[in-house]
Image 1 (tube, one colour):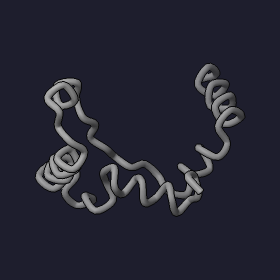
Image 2 (cartoon, one colour):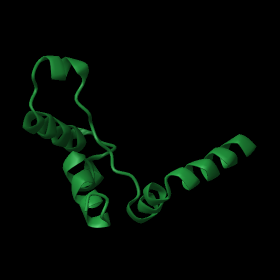
Image 3 (cartoon, one colour):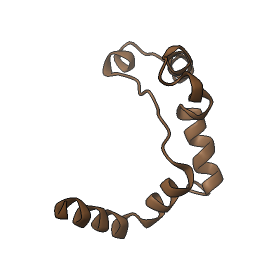
Image 4 (spheres, helix red, strand yellow):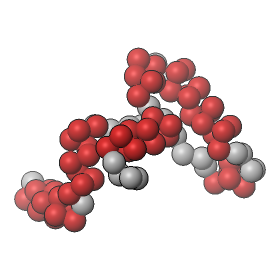
Length: 84
């Protein structure tokens, strides 16, 4: 418990914007390309389509698929001002 609290305090000190962003936006699930996908030259659009299909077809994520994925993460980070 103490190690966890110390680590959390340390991380908050190092990355205050990151953690304040999490408190505003929560978490965004993403599906990354595998090394096999990269080696096979799977492009970003195909990877995003596969990611979307995964969230829509998975029973645990279907109800929140509109708030999942790299596109939603990019939109959210831009709204919070991380990239501005």
